[in-house]
Image 1 (cartoon, rainbow, N blue to C red):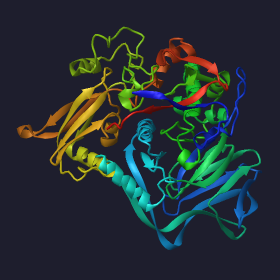
Image 2 (tube, helix red, strand yellow):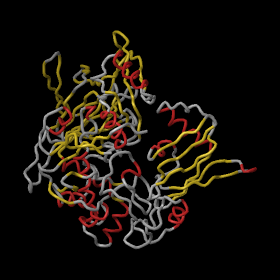
Image 3 (cartoon, helix red, strand yellow):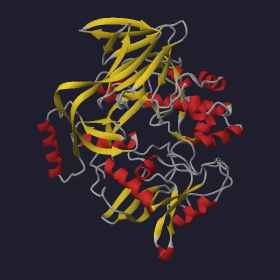
Image 4 (tube, one colour):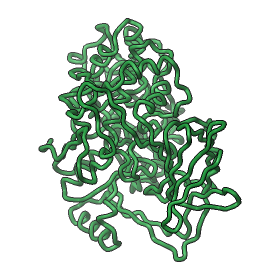
Length: 541
């Protein structure tokens, strides 16, 4: 049940640590397009590999400027290029690092909902992403071993067994380092810029192409014992590194405009994601793909310019501007995939302009209906595309391996099971999404929910699927075929579906109205709420 609003974030500077990310910029009055500076973590875990290396290069004829402190005094250096590496420095005394972990999740959305529920119990928490998203007891509050153990004991006394303490002994730490003019510098915080405002970054060990980024940079510590390279980049410049990589430059112009509006809305609504690590947004599919100015093309630049400052709102609040590759012919409601309060504009409906299926009379919660729906291949916006329909087979051996890896990562008591005996869908949404998947093993039964299913098994490309057992001689279960449709969460806009609507001549506002019913387009301004924190009572699963 939704309680009263605890606080909201609007587009003007507000006090308080939770709103600090917004204090860096003030928006223009209503009706005037504005640009703001974002903080994007483009290299999130620098130093998590032995001898991590990245090279930063200025454009020909330009120089890189580094600013940092030495014994409390500011220092400035310049170079045409900079090779940053990590060096391991031993600690004078081993240190024990520990944290209280409440839960682990595939998505930020579900993790944030769980965090809100812990807060409703009076427990201060923070969101982190060491690998998957996690909810931690706030380290500043529970800052001694005694406080952490008292917290755990109080939870266990209430019958809550899911929280745990993770600890490790640290004997050496990785620190960013570079050699310039024959001297080695090792600093934890470095501001980096160039004369013309662009720098090429090359990750030598990640097999990624080098990319050019606009703006300035900072190498800074994060919450995981390594470092993040943060790109400070204007919003509209940032979009040049997102739109072509998320949708492609060859789509009809209204489709590109729709993607530009969603990308702009998405990033402004999600500036809180990495508050724990002191930046705002990431550059991967956990946020939006951002690859700098490489790949920008005239068509996407035109779409960004044509929609400058435009965002999508619902009741004067930015929407959760979610999109994915392919819905499989039916969009998912927010709660089909994640936990949290329902978004009225994120509904389940058939992704088609034709009357191919009626969810009101033929709910896909019924597996017979779902199988008939998956068998349909004509009349949808995504018709004929690669991931619209699929069938993936997985052996029991492979499923054992997948599930054991997942359960170990969350320290589940059944992580050491021997083999899976049965997998069964026990609950579906009206849109056919698997809400609960029961797995029977030789050591007991467990239940996977919503997008955690995609964490546990590699085979399905979405949660829109049914299962067919694969049997050998004597009806021995050998594995399962996952038969379904779509790629990704299917909440909000289908990128493949929007291509079709664009080819039909639909405008960007009509495309967005189809996938986000009841929403409004408006210029960004100080009256709009970025994000409203809604509280929940009680702890859920």
